[in-house]
Length: 150
Image (cartoon, rainbow, N blue to C red; front, side, top):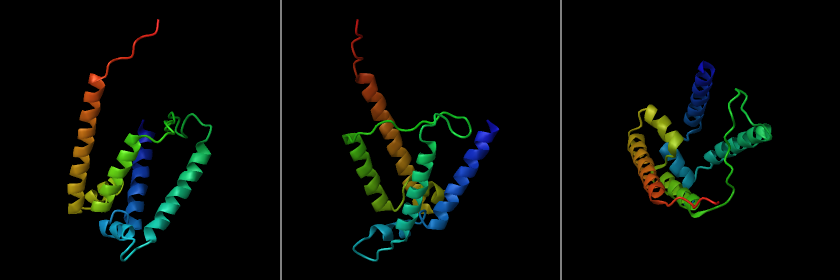
């Protein structure tokens, strides 16, 4: 248990430092990256390409494995279809990112660094997550259970 905590802490620390050093936690830099018609800053594209490369290597390494290097079960997404929930969520994420210059991870890093805008974004993000949970619970409670086959 202690090893998992230390591993999670180190991973989060490296991730947060990477976000700070790359500029991903700076909303002005992110908004400059998203401003294709204005003073476009392409530097975050290199950060994203680097992240994609690391992800490809990691997913190639774990292919066929059922557990992590620490012995925990791997919980990878199994869904491969596009549906309205995925598209709506992606659009909401993109609009939020474009308006605020934050996405969840960098917003938490910026909040920890004392960025006032990040506090507003994180509050809105938590409210949205709470609203989603409320809607999902109500939807689950009103759904009729499928008939049991005999």
